[in-house]
Figure 1 (cartoon, rainbow, N blue to C red):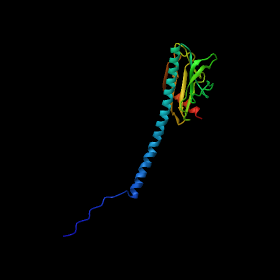
Figure 2 (cartoon, one colour):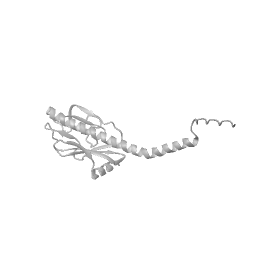
Figure 3 (spheres, one colour):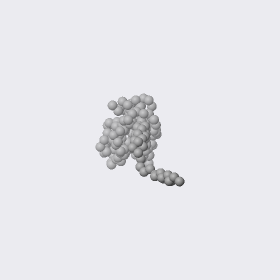
Figure 4 (cartoon, rainbow, N blue to C red):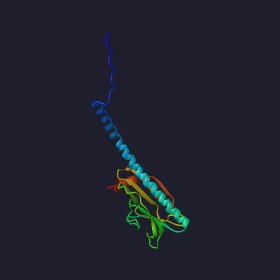
Length: 185
């Protein structure tokens, strides 16, 4: 009678070829997935900034209506004074309108969006700040804030304030998206 066949021993570990195959598959998946991931991050940053601006402008309007005093929302560079520049990406102030145009009375409330360095937020040329009246309106011309990502103008949104004081967000038109592209250079 022939001797019994030896039992096959279980394999322990991976061969070099199997390891190289796993690394090659992982590298391929990373190359395919990373651009989509960064597009997702860029879109998310723009949406968060849009939501923050909508919330702060609605807060400023509600503050004007509740207190019966005009409130001002404006961009700032130093966190204490309104800026004459149309750049909002460094933060913005909300407070009661002071005696001088563009001045905030008392200690303003600073709202700072975490600067990522990847966003550009610009107001329309003729209107750099927004003033809400005690009735909730925002006299003057409409205000549009363009929110652009340095990754490209396909990641751009806006916030618009009408003369009636209505604050709304939306996607940029083709013209606004081109303005975003112009501001990135």
